Length: 381
Image 1 (cartoon, rainbow, N blue to C red):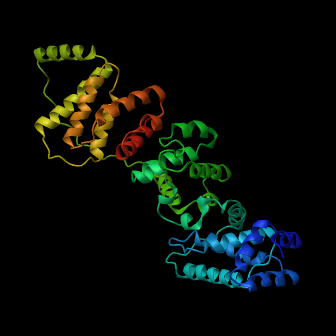
Image 2 (image 1 turned 180 degrees about the vertical axis):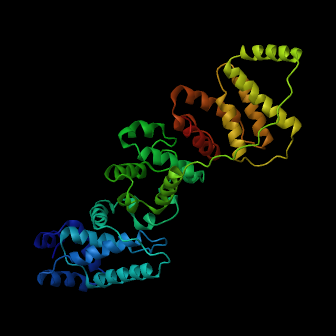
């Protein structure tokens, strides 16, 4: 029987027929088995399918999920769309996978909270629509690593999204009505720098349907779920108040001459522009640290990036040369040998001040500097 004749005779899509035909070269019994089941009037086992989807739904909520057979899942999905009976071997394999998930649920240290029926029904509908997307492949969906979802740039530079990425992503997903503007100002601009754009688009569309509730978290990959939930916890946790400092001892009143000298210095300082004051103070701090508190060269750390960020913020058209010198001093102190980095940072910040587009302004900056500065620029009011 030809492939077209077989498709017309049984009323099933050509894709399913092609898959059946591919098996003919290995075993004729598979072809005969489907014809026999169809002749008996068997249809797709919807009850087994619901149990199978529920096993995926439950497995996805486990701390250490079981990697189920993705090819089996896709085959069953095709057969369901064609309302075809499934192979007996597939039927028994599905039952074994359901039993494996049940065993993991039973052996889990912390019991799963019961899921609402409505939540599962949403999952049942969505998983059938999106499960063929590369994003939704279960080997990626349950992979705790971000690697499957990163851009080529991020993989090349070995850049992994950190807490700052998920805090920024959370802000965008919490304001869907301002999505277009928020995403343009988001440091990684819809994933063009770190995360694939189709992943960001999927997260956005999902957040429009479900406002960051159980439905949303049940349908996103494990790495995103962990990162966003951590960001949510940090968002809900009130900042810790600093302990009250010991009051400083009272100073003796200054003499009249010292008061006059101080007033003269203050008036001179007030006459300088705010930008020049900031640049002078930044240079003063660097000189004091280098002259009075010398340290052995070390790797860039959070203190280094805070100093770099504060120095860059003082940049204006009148002090570009001075700020570049201050940045170069800081890079030298931390033994950063990237050629021309100080000049690149100044050029990138000049572009950013004109466009407010961090992603395109800093696109040429090495990954560690890009990621750390993105975190700080994203936190600007």
